[in-house]
Image (cartoon, rainbow, N blue to C red; front, side):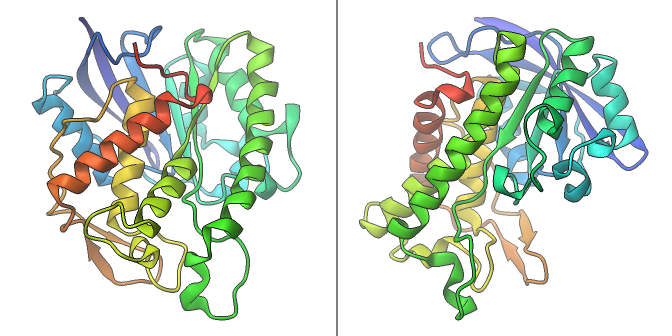
Amino acid sequence: MMLRDYRLALLVPGIWLLSSTAICTADDTAAEGATEGLRVSYQSYYTTEIEAVIEAAETAGKVQRYSHARAADNGFNKWLKGGENALKPPQKAAVEKGETDALVFGMWWSSVGRWYGVTGEKSSMNLVALWGVKNNPEFRLLWQTHWATLMGHIQDKKDRSFHALDVVTPHYEKARKLLEAEVDFVNQQHDRRVVVIIPVTAAVLDLRAMVAEGKFPGLSEQSELFIPGTWNAQRHIRMLTAYCNFAVLFGVSPEGLSPSVDHLNYRAKGGPLSSMAGITAEQHKILQKLAWDTVTSYPYTGVQKK
């Protein structure tokens, strides 16, 4: 069993916050090649659920946390359009100096079709990878895919997030292939997996199928997974997303963790304040297994079960 120090660095406008964590990797689930002194920067997507999972991992003996840090959003248009402004100056400086080991990118418009045609060598994905490896040969860019909501306009907005799986799935299969092609382009230049994918879309599609087939206790309709009239996720998808993030970042299974989330709240843009309370222990167990199975069965995560 290997113990390594983990320092979490997150961007608040004008301020870099550092926290220390030690990660204990389980022999039977760890990804190989993880580096010591892991320093992580979050680009837009960072939630209190992720923090709760890390704290639960501490309790379980997988992660030991010494202090906390928070993250703030960065404008997605600058990122998706590529160029030198893809990262804010303090974040870019840390990446270029080799002070960032992992940059986690997660935005609602993360699919290649939303990149304004800026792909290949001009894409932000490629530029950030080049900045990162310049002074850090172990740098990784973790790309989180979108929640599996409907892409496109439906006249009845109350139904637009809950379109049938047989319509939604082909759309995301196409998006997955486009993203994998961009990831392959970057990684082939470096002869290793600089960019890995956090497969949230695949995990959510499987969760939606479980609900539709009556195999997820406590939920009977897929619409219960989303906030009505929006593409925003409710608590179960948010929790699944946190588990997927944790699994890819650390190469550690979230199975068996008991994150404390009932006191946490979230708010969709323009929506009411909602609570994370209500996820049962049985549901957590299912979400953890789903996250770990999805992550370890998808080669683009770089994580494998031993």
